[in-house]
Length: 179
Image (cartoon, rainbow, N blue to C red; front, side):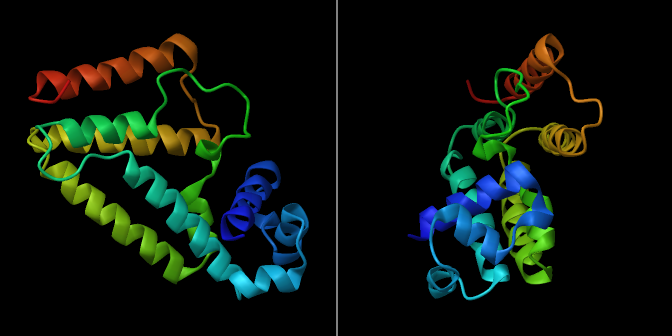
């Protein structure tokens, strides 16, 4: 039931925006009573925290364990963040969920939890066996790509998207990264 409710939050968020994530809207989207929702998530903040944690867990599952070859974590970070193909206008996928915006809407505790995860990932990037500036550049490119998509600011499409991603992969591989 928890996943069903969290799926409903993601659908409402992607379709209607963060301001539409309300308990009654999520319950309706999930096809449950508000009481049923409150049984699993006693507050909107708990619901938002659940979505943020689940999305961070999904992201982390795509990353290699410590001890992977040099560059493997940075390459996996890139691949898990920027799709190989240029995204279309379809906003139905979970990768469209603006995680940082949702975390901010969840309040300082939820945002702090996301920041803690991000700090851990940043340490892993810095300790990935690449030149530190390369790992930072990849992280900042990923952050910029997401910010551009979130705010619809000059998002690279089609060939520009593909070339940008390929350039980042090449940078990782030529600076001691994994295949």
